[in-house]
Length: 170
Image (cartoon, rainbow, N blue to C red):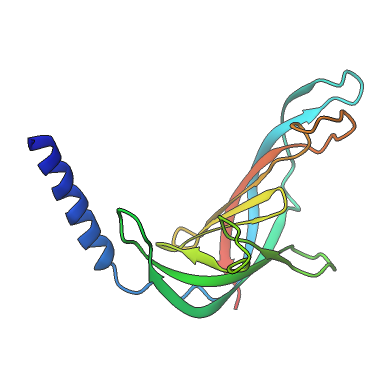
């Protein structure tokens, strides 16, 4: 009985803290994010064996544009966490291609472009690449799934994790 009471007290106090957290910081704007390190696995073209590798990130950078939707709420579940809803696009810095729309998890038809940001942490996905941004710490992490899990051996896309720092540029 004491364990249950203690657990309930922790959940109630955590819930109260989450509700008192106040409105989230306005994250709207454009950010320049430069990679500082990256590693993953790659397939040796001769042996067809996957092995660990590091990548040169000297030219690796992204721009992320975050747009405020003006919507917010409190998450459902045990912890009632305040969130704010944004939309985001990501593109490789210097690319002539259009920015790509980033999607939230889980992807639903109704909220395809909505990204629920909790405590300055934005997480979204474009195809097989996941983007994580800690806007308060000005850090980012990109994870690309690559071709390792594919059934066909011709896909030699290298799965990787890249990390770096972001700065707001507008």
